Length: 199
Image (cartoon, rainbow, N blue to C red; front, side):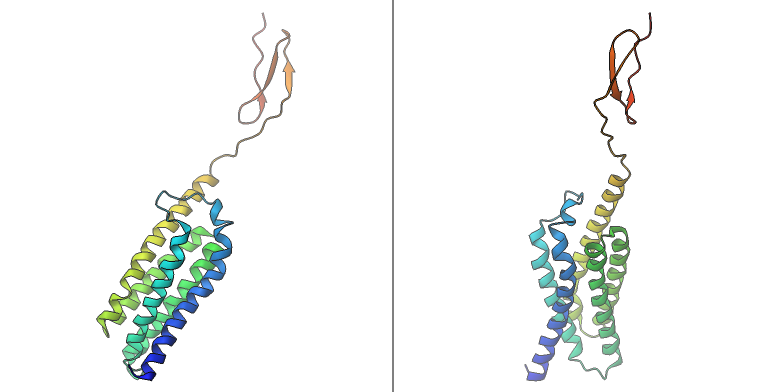
């Protein structure tokens, strides 16, 4: 490999990993705090899975972009494909900012749909120039599809939990009824239990 191409390869991988690193600034602090408190579906992977999977995907993205870049920026299709690639990288950064940064799972789901569309557009543009480069992005779109479904599931669980009325803690107060019996508070509004019917 020529030195120029080797440097392009390193640059493409670095840029891709940099996008992941920026996203991790929002992800890592939230994993053991906010994210740990969320209700999650049974298929939610262990937390340790995400870092190696994303690292591998960003490396594949970099290699894929390099295969397009080496075709030459004088080619209009190459320029268009790389613009799409950069756009989807930016969209990739915004998802952890929204999900882990501002804790908005609903908006994050909308954003990840946009990311998925941007990835698909990139794959189609890459395919016209280099089929191998397009194939290298297939694991990426599969993982984002899974991440989108996971995001949706967490969002729906969050909405369902928010709609469940909170339990009301009643006091230990009691009331003496006319017949001398004692009743306490019960029910959703902590109202007193009705006294026995008078004789």
